[in-house]
Length: 104
Image 1 (cartoon, one colour):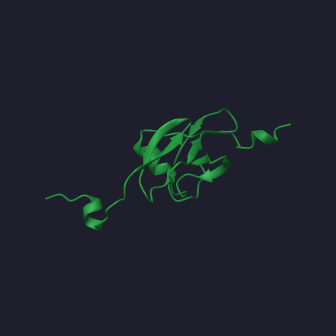
Image 2: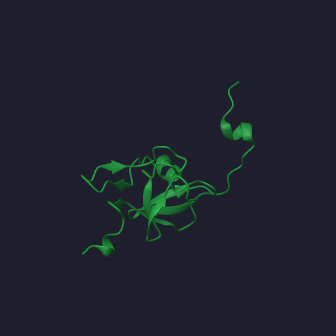
């Protein structure tokens, strides 16, 4: 009989809550990272590159590559694979270096 990782770990996640991604409501679970919640919702990219505007999302999943940078609650350059979700979090696609407010 196959068992799921949740069964093997004995984990019992709490009630889900909502975060938003670019204005769209996304469900999240307690302890889930921003990247995991976005992946679960079918969202694979939440950053564009500085040169060329190419889409990026999670790559390494352990905070080493910085491909998963997102703007979380108006704070740019947050590593989505490391940031735990909280009810009401606002995640937005980060464009380039995430500091458009400093553009000259």
